[in-house]
Length: 289
Image (cartoon, rainbow, N blue to C red; front, side, top):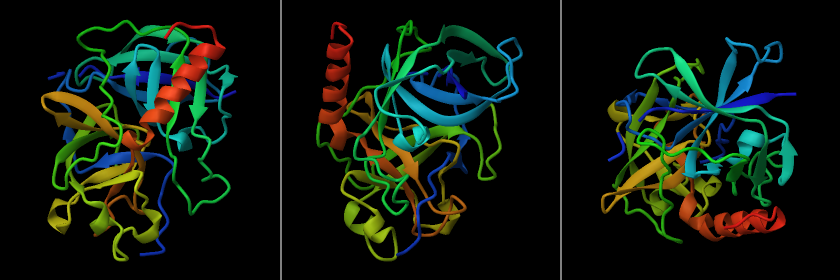
């Protein structure tokens, strides 16, 4: 079976008929993140089929995610297109720190039991033209020990919409060629209003109100999420508090294209789904909320 690991980096906390490219999205034209900057950043990695559980373990980065609670990770539904909601997966998860900008890792916690909850409205597997409801939750069987280097990001208020022009940050590992890099990258992307991003020359009817567009319109400033960062956070500072307003969902073929900004699942559109899903899970598993 495929085996995943979750990697949390040390981070400082303070038209158109163009179809979206969803499998594995990465940050392009960004900059290396300052150590300890994004303590909720998660990397879900898949173990090579030929790998053993003995070190060194060859893992491949698959998707990003956001730690929102000591037992819960927020990510994209398309990261688990072979998984079924509420099914226990015998996947190997491990919380790992990167050591500053070196290529070394130190395992903190190994978790063998996880459960994946995909939004029931996600139908991209059956209809590749529909990437709505691209959101999922991952429950960890063991709580993560919170420290200055590992801490959750806040969820936005239900229905909250960030004003156009608001700079928020997308974070992730990799480049437009899909290569696995070990340094976390970050890019500040201004929010683009729905009216603009839903124009025929932009994303047209691919865009839904439950999504967020963000990026630059000038070709000289183009930055985006690209291959490898699907499921990762689009974090905004609101009154001094970091909130995860978006989950990396899709972008254009080639990652950077004029009038084809990065698109994120708008977390505030799914506030009730997140709360209800967690409550249902806790009730069915006899856990205290």
